Image (cartoon, rainbow, N blue to C red; front, top):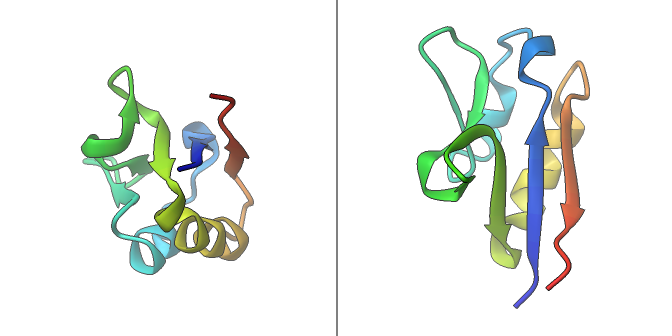
Length: 79
């Protein structure tokens, strides 16, 4: 099954939280109310980079497209 890397440019987050509302399985807001990847999918513990399974790709892409500052990026992971 394909996997995808999700990257958030956290420092540019404006705390809109639309990503967390549209795709709570992948995104959540941290204590500073900035978007981060849920702990389960974080790559090497990094809250702004995660590896998600194919079944979450559509909701992550919807969240990325809805982000008002376009700081969420999704790319396939080479296996």
